[in-house]
Length: 301
Image 1 (cartoon, rainbow, N blue to C red):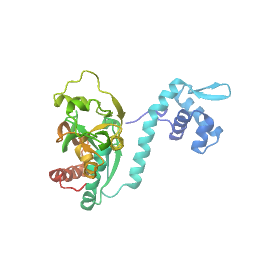
Image 2 (image 1 turned 90 degrees about the vertical axis):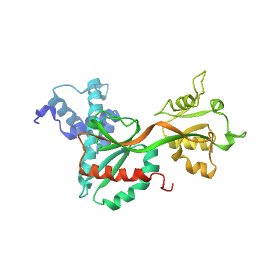
Image 3 (image 1 turned 45 degrees about the vertical axis):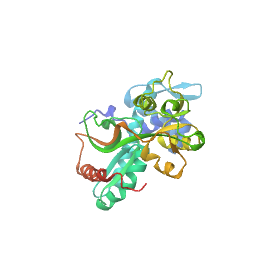
Image 4 (image 1 turned 180 degrees about the horizontal axis):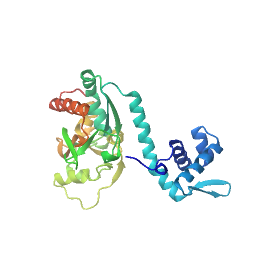
């Protein structure tokens, strides 16, 4: 597809605009890009001439970006990052290609990574690059071939492969439970540790146990299960955890289970990929993962 020249500014000019927006001044942008302040100013003027609009104005002795330029810089920042990532992949691409995978940090580190050496032995020609992503994203807007997600297995425009069901167990440090295991209705009186990506996980667990809460559940919010595990081990509260993430801590006595057995969660972990974007290396990875799910409980942790 052909574009008019004014719609495709130079990469160096865009980098200067992004740096000015990120760092707040011409001098800081020049230092960041190893340029003179004069070179930065000239590139910015050339970009203004190409676009036919002002991108900066004088504020005393400082040159500041216009509101429109701030919006433009924010939009091109992600594009520049994708160009850099694509260039790196091109420069380091192995014979069989590279598979870019978005993973959930806890599940990726505890379940997927220990299994990857087997894939590397079977497919040494394929390199897997992994990036942690907690929030949902659209494949069309991100440079990922596939992702590991938690949910019910249905994402619009995507295919999925079930990797592992999840079972939840409430846990706490022994020091928090001097009188032994409490009844489910008594757990709400403890300080609770919440996961930001699943804010209703405790409420759903209490509901499944038939416990009605008269007041909203309180406690502290965390962004990852790994931080919740550490907080629980140090006695900061009770945590509702996927059982496979705390089996070590339960085995060593750092944590104690606050229920007789894990409760199966409504969601599960899946490999997810766009229906229109599957290629040979992704299918090889999917087929290998399908074999790994058959013996998911035999791997030492």
